Amino acid sequence: MSSNKSKVAIIGTGFVGASAAFAMSLSQITSELVLIDVFKDKAEGEAMDINHGLSFLGQMSVYAGDYSDCKDCDVIVVTAGANRKPGETRIDLAKKNVAIAKEITANIMKHYTKGVILVVANPVDVMTYMIQKWSGLPEGKVFGSGTVLDSVRFRHLISSKLDVDVKNVHGYIIGEHGDSQLPAWSATHIAGVKMDDYCEEGKISITDEDKAAIMEDVRKAGAEIIKKKNATYYGIAVTINAIVESLLKNQKTIRTVSTVINNKFGINDVALSLPAILTSDGVRSLIDLPLTDKEIADLQNSANALKIILDEVKDI
Ligand code: NAD
Image 1 (cartoon, rainbow, N blue to C red):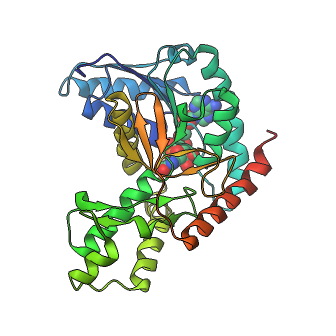
Image 2 (cartoon, rainbow, N blue to C red):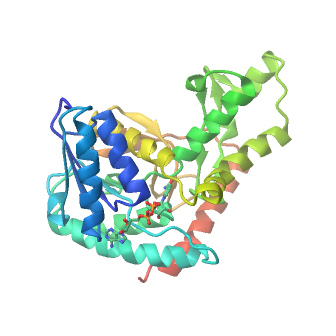
């Protein structure tokens, strides 16, 4: 059993929510896990299924509940929301999921006593912004999974290209969790050495085309998986588990979560991803990356792309 008493709620037990619950049962990260879904049968079925496996894993309380169970949660994970259907625009999806998020936020806040809200449903930056505003909670207490998974994919591709352990690759995808995201190449290091210097010293060829290809692979990874198997859930499930672990254990891990940004790189009043220190209270602070002028301009473009969607949904 997880050594410390902790309580996590997952709202939305579809592919992502159920896989995250399963990941948490494997890691035994929390002593209590409540599953909430508009289709109660789905949440109950997932809880039963996970409970049967728990005999091999450890003691943990996993059950289907309702919003009153958000009381006393350390972390509330929001994965409820539809995926984009063929022919549907990003704005259509945003409108649909933001409407769901409004109802969910009101329900959470009726019973909220403490804890952080981790938003995963897409478009995650827009959902994070709206849920933070509607909840009235401090900005650091509501944040999104943002580009955490994109950053892991980025590091993985660099590690393959340079043939070095991914644990020694530090690099971040910042901005939108979506098309306008960008790699912070200027802050990409291998064992403390700037990536370009590392490649030069090691006589490793990495051209601008190679970098563009890495970025394109990161950007398209989600869509590529959806094309092959209709949804993505294992990668994000493990990502959610890792973020929850950082929070519950107060690990002060730095991750590119999505938070409401003000007075950073000339960007205000929008949620997007930058490296942030995570404590049990949520986002403690953001890391000031030494971005180039071009990277700052690209980050500002990413913020502007998000603001266009926010303008469409803010009156929902
Ligand atoms: P899904 O359709 O399998 O599951 C969604 C679940 O939400 C369903 O069980 C549904 O009943 C539930 N739900 C809908 N409305 C609800 C409400 N009002 N209250 C409670 N529950 C409600 O979808 P999925 O594949 O699990 O994806 C969920 C979301 O996660 C999507 O928005 C998807 O785009 C997003 N996602 C995000 C990332 C990321 O990196 N941020 C990665 C993968 C998926």
